[in-house]
Image (tube, rainbow, N blue to C red; front, side, top):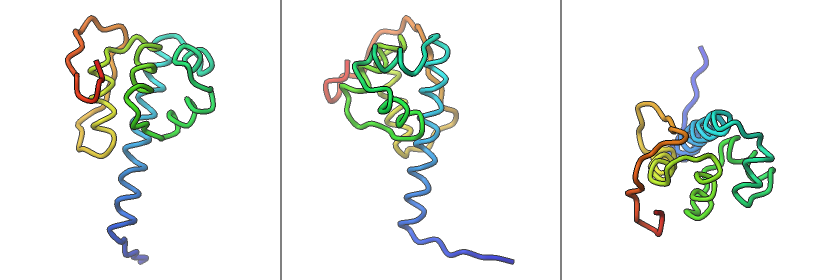
Length: 114
């Protein structure tokens, strides 16, 4: 039997990677639901396609302006994108899902995200 000892640092890295992948998967799903290719979504958000690919691969951007532009490109409500990013940066979550084309009123105003 093989046992490995994980340090707190290793566990934190694994946790970040897992939540990042969850975030990226949700972004990919929302993009596909919106009927956009990576190139189309990136262009609509004012990003390089390589940056969008990195996000879908698990990088969770901490820049609210970037998240807002991505939400607009996919027709995802700003408050939902902000909450999703916050949760996927490490907070426990029971199911991550982004609604595309929602009619919800934006409610998140912290850090200028509205």
